[in-house]
Image 1 (tube, one colour):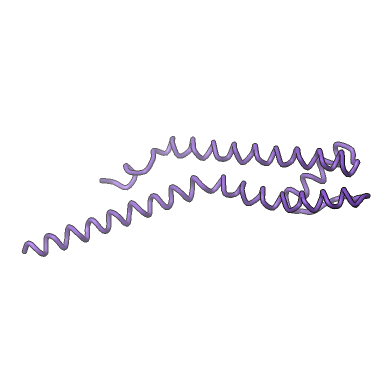
Image 2: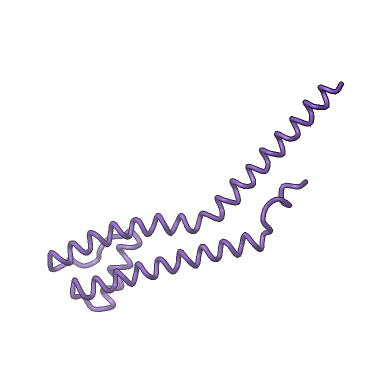
Length: 127
């Protein structure tokens, strides 16, 4: 039996990949919304500046503006740590279907190799 026949069809794989990418995108939007709200209400920044700072922190670039209060600085610190976790989870969501398919394919190849060796050993034993 061919290896590809044991793997999920490519359209199923693509659908899974798209669902995972959509979930990752939704997570980033929620995280960005949290950052925008925090910078606006805690740091007192305008909405556009809040978007800029939240985007820069979430992307790992760092803050743009100096923060005026201790509360704003604490929020930015917590949000930066949160942003790191969001990055890791997002990458996990995006890579999960790819890694799953790769590991499944390698497992199928290993099973096929073991079956071939077992069949060869059984044929040699009969002779």
